[in-house]
Length: 214
Ligand code: HEC
Image 1 (cartoon, rainbow, N blue to C red):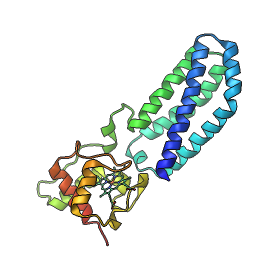
Image 2: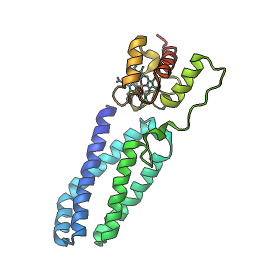
Image 3: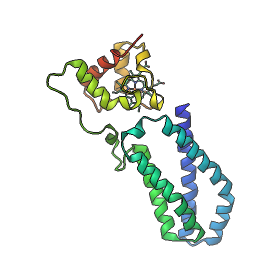
Image 4: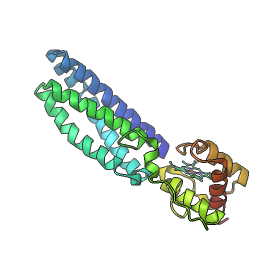
Protein backbone atom coordinates (compact mmCIF):
# COMPACT_ATOMS: atom_id res chain seq x y z
CA UNK A 1 0.00 0.00 0.00
CA UNK A 2 2.65 2.53 1.09
CA UNK A 3 4.91 1.69 -1.85
CA UNK A 4 2.00 1.83 -4.31
CA UNK A 5 0.95 5.25 -3.03
CA UNK A 6 4.54 6.44 -3.16
CA UNK A 7 4.76 5.46 -6.84
CA UNK A 8 1.41 7.17 -7.51
CA UNK A 9 2.75 10.29 -5.83
CA UNK A 10 5.95 10.36 -7.87
CA UNK A 11 3.99 9.67 -11.08
CA UNK A 12 1.43 12.42 -10.39
CA UNK A 13 4.20 14.89 -9.51
CA UNK A 14 6.14 13.97 -12.67
CA UNK A 15 3.11 14.53 -14.90
CA UNK A 16 2.39 17.82 -13.16
CA UNK A 17 6.02 18.87 -13.72
CA UNK A 18 5.90 17.80 -17.37
CA UNK A 19 2.80 19.95 -18.01
CA UNK A 20 4.53 22.85 -16.26
CA UNK A 21 7.67 22.34 -18.31
CA UNK A 22 5.77 22.52 -21.61
CA UNK A 23 3.89 25.59 -20.43
CA UNK A 24 7.11 27.33 -19.42
CA UNK A 25 8.61 26.54 -22.80
CA UNK A 26 5.59 28.07 -24.57
CA UNK A 27 5.68 31.08 -22.24
CA UNK A 28 9.39 31.74 -22.74
CA UNK A 29 9.23 31.37 -26.52
CA UNK A 30 6.33 33.85 -26.62
CA UNK A 31 3.81 31.41 -28.13
CA UNK A 32 0.86 32.98 -26.37
CA UNK A 33 -1.92 31.38 -28.40
CA UNK A 34 -0.40 27.93 -28.12
CA UNK A 35 0.04 28.47 -24.39
CA UNK A 36 -3.61 29.42 -23.90
CA UNK A 37 -4.75 26.45 -25.98
CA UNK A 38 -2.47 24.04 -24.12
CA UNK A 39 -3.58 25.42 -20.75
CA UNK A 40 -7.24 24.97 -21.68
CA UNK A 41 -6.68 21.42 -22.89
CA UNK A 42 -4.70 20.33 -19.85
CA UNK A 43 -6.82 22.09 -17.23
CA UNK A 44 -8.79 18.99 -16.23
CA UNK A 45 -5.66 16.79 -16.27
CA UNK A 46 -3.90 19.31 -14.11
CA UNK A 47 -6.72 19.37 -11.57
CA UNK A 48 -6.80 15.55 -11.45
CA UNK A 49 -3.05 15.15 -11.06
CA UNK A 50 -2.61 17.97 -8.59
CA UNK A 51 -5.39 16.56 -6.38
CA UNK A 52 -3.81 13.13 -6.70
CA UNK A 53 -0.40 14.39 -5.66
CA UNK A 54 -1.75 16.36 -2.72
CA UNK A 55 -3.87 13.43 -1.45
CA UNK A 56 -1.12 10.83 -1.90
CA UNK A 57 1.30 13.30 -0.32
CA UNK A 58 -0.88 13.61 2.77
CA UNK A 59 -1.08 9.81 3.09
CA UNK A 60 2.70 9.49 2.74
CA UNK A 61 3.36 12.25 5.27
CA UNK A 62 1.12 10.52 7.82
CA UNK A 63 2.96 7.22 7.39
CA UNK A 64 6.46 8.51 6.92
CA UNK A 65 9.31 8.20 9.35
CA UNK A 66 11.62 10.37 7.32
CA UNK A 67 9.74 13.64 7.66
CA UNK A 68 10.74 13.70 11.30
CA UNK A 69 14.38 13.76 10.27
CA UNK A 70 14.69 17.51 9.80
CA UNK A 71 13.06 20.58 8.37
CA UNK A 72 13.54 19.55 4.70
CA UNK A 73 9.92 18.39 4.57
CA UNK A 74 8.44 21.63 5.93
CA UNK A 75 10.69 23.66 3.66
CA UNK A 76 9.40 21.68 0.69
CA UNK A 77 5.76 22.15 1.71
CA UNK A 78 6.39 25.87 2.17
CA UNK A 79 7.93 26.20 -1.32
CA UNK A 80 5.15 24.24 -3.01
CA UNK A 81 2.41 26.16 -1.18
CA UNK A 82 4.07 29.40 -2.23
CA UNK A 83 4.83 28.42 -5.83
CA UNK A 84 1.46 27.07 -6.92
CA UNK A 85 -0.47 30.38 -6.67
CA UNK A 86 2.53 32.37 -7.97
CA UNK A 87 2.80 29.98 -10.93
CA UNK A 88 -0.89 30.38 -11.77
CA UNK A 89 -0.59 34.18 -11.69
CA UNK A 90 2.60 34.11 -13.78
CA UNK A 91 0.77 32.23 -16.55
CA UNK A 92 -2.36 34.34 -16.41
CA UNK A 93 -0.29 37.50 -16.77
CA UNK A 94 2.36 35.94 -19.05
CA UNK A 95 5.28 36.82 -16.76
CA UNK A 96 8.23 34.95 -18.22
CA UNK A 97 10.78 35.37 -15.44
CA UNK A 98 8.37 34.43 -12.67
CA UNK A 99 7.20 31.38 -14.61
CA UNK A 100 10.82 30.29 -15.02
CA UNK A 101 11.57 30.92 -11.35
CA UNK A 102 8.64 28.73 -10.31
CA UNK A 103 9.88 25.95 -12.61
CA UNK A 104 13.34 26.14 -11.03
CA UNK A 105 11.75 25.95 -7.56
CA UNK A 106 9.70 22.88 -8.57
CA UNK A 107 12.79 21.09 -9.88
CA UNK A 108 14.67 21.99 -6.69
CA UNK A 109 11.77 20.66 -4.58
CA UNK A 110 11.87 17.41 -6.57
CA UNK A 111 15.55 17.03 -5.65
CA UNK A 112 14.83 17.81 -1.99
CA UNK A 113 12.12 15.14 -1.92
CA UNK A 114 14.30 12.49 -3.53
CA UNK A 115 17.25 13.09 -1.19
CA UNK A 116 15.31 14.19 1.94
CA UNK A 117 17.76 17.06 2.21
CA UNK A 118 17.72 20.76 1.31
CA UNK A 119 21.30 20.46 0.01
CA UNK A 120 20.77 17.10 -1.71
CA UNK A 121 22.88 15.22 0.85
CA UNK A 122 21.36 11.82 1.54
CA UNK A 123 23.18 11.55 4.88
CA UNK A 124 21.37 14.57 6.34
CA UNK A 125 18.40 12.50 7.53
CA UNK A 126 20.64 10.67 10.00
CA UNK A 127 21.69 13.83 11.84
CA UNK A 128 24.88 14.25 13.85
CA UNK A 129 27.47 11.47 14.36
CA UNK A 130 26.83 8.94 17.13
CA UNK A 131 28.61 9.43 20.40
CA UNK A 132 29.49 6.23 22.13
CA UNK A 133 30.52 6.09 25.74
CA UNK A 134 33.89 4.33 26.16
CA UNK A 135 32.34 1.98 28.71
CA UNK A 136 29.45 1.01 26.46
CA UNK A 137 28.93 -2.70 25.97
CA UNK A 138 28.05 -4.24 22.58
CA UNK A 139 24.28 -3.94 23.14
CA UNK A 140 24.51 -0.23 24.03
CA UNK A 141 26.74 0.29 21.02
CA UNK A 142 24.24 -1.55 18.82
CA UNK A 143 21.44 0.52 20.30
CA UNK A 144 23.26 3.78 19.53
CA UNK A 145 23.64 2.70 15.89
CA UNK A 146 20.00 1.63 15.87
CA UNK A 147 18.74 4.94 17.24
CA UNK A 148 20.63 6.87 14.61
CA UNK A 149 20.04 4.74 11.51
CA UNK A 150 17.00 2.57 12.09
CA UNK A 151 14.58 4.20 14.49
CA UNK A 152 13.34 6.69 11.86
CA UNK A 153 11.35 3.86 10.27
CA UNK A 154 11.31 1.09 12.88
CA UNK A 155 10.72 3.38 15.89
CA UNK A 156 12.46 3.34 19.25
CA UNK A 157 10.83 0.00 20.19
CA UNK A 158 11.19 -1.65 16.77
CA UNK A 159 7.46 -1.84 16.08
CA UNK A 160 6.68 1.55 14.50
CA UNK A 161 6.31 0.31 10.89
CA UNK A 162 6.79 3.74 9.33
CA UNK A 163 7.66 3.81 5.59
CA UNK A 164 5.99 0.35 5.54
CA UNK A 165 8.84 -1.11 7.62
CA UNK A 166 8.57 -4.54 9.25
CA UNK A 167 7.74 -4.90 12.92
CA UNK A 168 11.12 -5.99 14.28
CA UNK A 169 9.66 -7.33 17.51
CA UNK A 170 7.76 -9.93 15.44
CA UNK A 171 10.66 -10.91 13.20
CA UNK A 172 11.50 -14.60 12.97
CA UNK A 173 14.63 -14.19 10.87
CA UNK A 174 17.89 -15.84 11.84
CA UNK A 175 20.98 -13.83 12.71
CA UNK A 176 22.38 -14.47 9.25
CA UNK A 177 19.22 -13.43 7.40
CA UNK A 178 18.95 -10.30 9.54
CA UNK A 179 22.54 -9.33 8.77
CA UNK A 180 21.92 -9.84 5.06
CA UNK A 181 18.90 -7.50 5.08
CA UNK A 182 20.83 -4.84 6.99
CA UNK A 183 23.71 -5.13 4.57
CA UNK A 184 21.73 -5.30 1.31
CA UNK A 185 18.52 -3.43 2.22
CA UNK A 186 14.98 -4.28 1.31
CA UNK A 187 12.22 -2.22 -0.40
CA UNK A 188 12.47 1.35 0.91
CA UNK A 189 15.20 0.32 3.38
CA UNK A 190 18.51 1.23 1.78
CA UNK A 191 21.53 -1.06 1.99
CA UNK A 192 23.72 -0.20 4.94
CA UNK A 193 26.92 -1.90 3.77
CA UNK A 194 28.41 1.33 2.50
CA UNK A 195 27.48 3.32 5.57
CA UNK A 196 28.34 0.86 8.34
CA UNK A 197 31.30 -1.46 8.83
CA UNK A 198 30.67 -5.21 9.11
CA UNK A 199 31.35 -4.95 12.83
CA UNK A 200 28.79 -2.17 13.24
CA UNK A 201 26.22 -4.11 11.21
CA UNK A 202 26.74 -7.09 13.52
CA UNK A 203 26.32 -4.89 16.60
CA UNK A 204 23.06 -3.42 15.35
CA UNK A 205 21.95 -6.88 14.19
CA UNK A 206 22.46 -8.24 17.71
CA UNK A 207 20.56 -5.30 19.11
CA UNK A 208 17.53 -5.79 16.83
CA UNK A 209 17.54 -9.52 17.57
CA UNK A 210 17.26 -8.59 21.25
CA UNK A 211 14.00 -6.77 20.40
CA UNK A 212 12.30 -9.98 19.21
CA UNK A 213 9.40 -10.85 21.47
CA UNK A 214 8.43 -14.11 19.76
C1 HEC B 1 13.66 4.06 5.32
C2 HEC B 1 13.09 3.22 6.37
C3 HEC B 1 13.96 2.17 7.00
C4 HEC B 1 15.13 2.34 7.71
C5 HEC B 1 15.88 3.64 7.98
C6 HEC B 1 15.52 1.02 8.15
N1 HEC B 1 14.59 0.09 7.75
FE1 HEC B 1 14.62 -1.90 8.16
N2 HEC B 1 12.98 -2.18 6.99
C7 HEC B 1 12.33 -1.19 6.29
C8 HEC B 1 11.41 -1.81 5.35
C9 HEC B 1 10.50 -1.05 4.39
C10 HEC B 1 11.54 -3.21 5.50
C11 HEC B 1 10.91 -4.32 4.67
C12 HEC B 1 9.48 -4.53 4.86
C13 HEC B 1 9.01 -5.65 3.96
O1 HEC B 1 9.76 -6.57 3.65
O2 HEC B 1 7.85 -5.56 3.58
C14 HEC B 1 12.53 -3.40 6.57
C15 HEC B 1 12.89 -4.64 7.03
C16 HEC B 1 13.87 -4.85 8.00
C17 HEC B 1 14.20 -6.15 8.56
C18 HEC B 1 13.55 -7.49 8.20
C19 HEC B 1 12.62 -7.93 9.32
C20 HEC B 1 11.80 -9.14 8.96
O3 HEC B 1 11.48 -9.92 9.87
O4 HEC B 1 11.46 -9.29 7.76
C21 HEC B 1 15.22 -5.95 9.46
C22 HEC B 1 15.93 -6.98 10.29
C23 HEC B 1 15.50 -4.52 9.46
N3 HEC B 1 14.65 -3.89 8.57
C24 HEC B 1 16.46 -3.91 10.24
C25 HEC B 1 16.86 -2.58 10.10
C26 HEC B 1 18.02 -2.02 10.74
C27 HEC B 1 18.96 -2.77 11.69
C28 HEC B 1 18.10 -0.73 10.34
C29 HEC B 1 19.18 0.27 10.69
C30 HEC B 1 20.54 -0.09 10.44
C31 HEC B 1 16.96 -0.47 9.47
N4 HEC B 1 16.23 -1.63 9.34
C32 HEC B 1 16.66 0.77 8.89
C33 HEC B 1 12.52 0.18 6.44
C34 HEC B 1 13.63 0.75 7.04
